[in-house]
Length: 252
Ligand code: MN
Image (tube, helix red, strand yellow):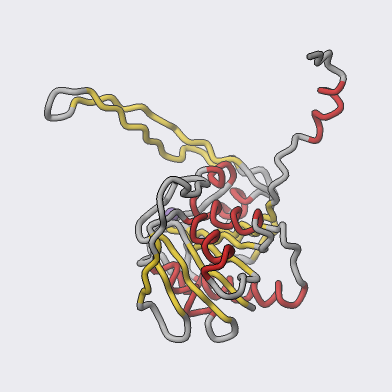
């Protein structure tokens, strides 16, 4: 399969290289990734300036490029003609940290995969918990197996698989669950301070205080030491409300 690899942590990330090295034996792999960290940048495309692309030495058997664009720009570049042939699968990751529940709306990792399915290419976003160590080769092995299954069963072009891995020793991972999106509750804080010139600045921060893990969600799967695979699509229509809204007196 012709696979485009990208990420939001930047071209130098060990998670990106682990994926490339694991997939290159069986697939035609090309890496196009941002030249800097775009984590928590959401889904954005660069329209107000040109994009530059540089060759990068990364590993044996595949070409790698870095750009000064966003993760979604990397996918657009590949799809719009920078590569001779369009990719058949986009894989974004392995991200440094999980992307669970609502996180996917902030995530540059998932945004690159969303750009994939918007362009009609099935996509995988892969994220892995970072503490206490970050065994990206374990994550890359699982992605190889998932790609094998995609090759065997096929996948629709509008499907994004959001994969999350717990960070525990390999033999303690209990298995794989196919999940729905759950909820992570953050304790967001606004910190107000003064800079050395006496001007006020604000810093928004937050930590996870609770993982609301109803059974069957990605959040619960990770808490229970399973790998989580959530199928995502881009239809954000609230179908439950269609009939209700049509019953309103919405005159113009
Ligand atoms: Mn990231």
